[in-house]
Image (cartoon, rainbow, N blue to C red; front, side, top):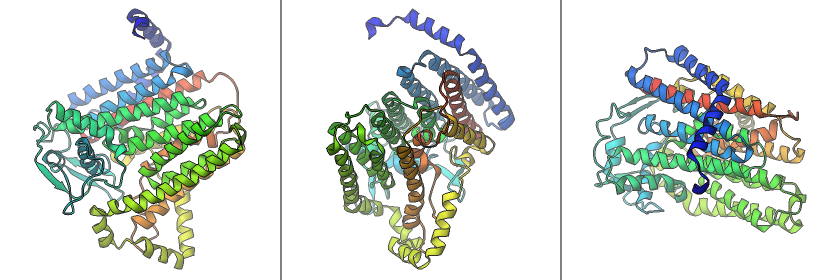
Length: 519
């Protein structure tokens, strides 16, 4: 590959791509400047020079990303665009996001640090997990203020400007902590753990435990999305747009296992699209086995996502080599579900209660069996509650806008995603397959609320507590396939270019809002 690389030719191609994308770069610049001036102005920053520096970086990386897209806009190269967009905006988010600002990042930190030592299954001794003192040095001094919906409304001592401990060396003194997400599988923390291992290896300051862990997590997500875009034979640009949802990039720029979950969900959907478009009589045991393995990996991370295993039922039957492999697909669903039950009952449930969650259940009167008895004796009320939450639209679905003061622009972003979902030009997909993906979307949406009704809501309350918008991110890659009714044929170049422009623009707004909110 290096033998064919010519720097002067690459620079010339990049220059031509920039000239070709000039209109979109100007639109991006206008979009960003309008947001800065109308939403924040120049009076709401503790450090105006720092704000101006970040705004300048956001403008530069946005223009670079747009130009990079125009240089790699062929379908075979779009995966490169996905990787670069997520990486550029995500890296800046890794640094700007305050310590322990992302949901449950303090506990993800503990699990990642334990993983960095080579422990795949954390040991629970004396009601605690052993991490290092640097965890308390970094996180123990941070005060995160949240509202009743668990949205961050303030962070004290959480940035490099306000923290007094970020420059300390890594302190390996053992430190006991009561929770470590032990119920999650180890492979969801390998990237973060590797980042922390590198920080330890080079004797860096404590803050690099957090930053390197976040960066490796982000690289994993960007790589998974790039692979999915390369794999899928259809809907590449909508897949990029859904992967670049600001909340998804925000979560992937933290230590959260959500990066692995969302990335693997996108790969799984891409593999479904690959099987859906496979020629007749070509899907064999290899494809069925890979799909089942991906479903198992995903479901072990979050039990509700086992429902994705049902996607194989909606691959056209003629695409399988013979009936035997189609029935193998059905058998794989049963096998995946059984393994999921064994994992949950044999390990995850026990590990779940080896944490603060046990005392939380006792203190708040949470009992799945007690809640089931209440639901059965108040069945009419339960159905009404389910219907209410089924039709409820969460205004925070994309941005966690109360975190980042995005209320005004969130509605615009919802319209943008709605346009991609309903109006993006597609071929006429098989009706049975679309009905199937619709049922999976509905099942996961309702199922998530039901799970929280039984596992995080006090007995007698039918308002499921703890549900957050990020839990629904794995659904979005299916939206265009399921709901688009625009089957017009023709050149989609302008549409694709505008989608990429707006996806980049809204990521820029997320970074600007981070500065405006926390700096």
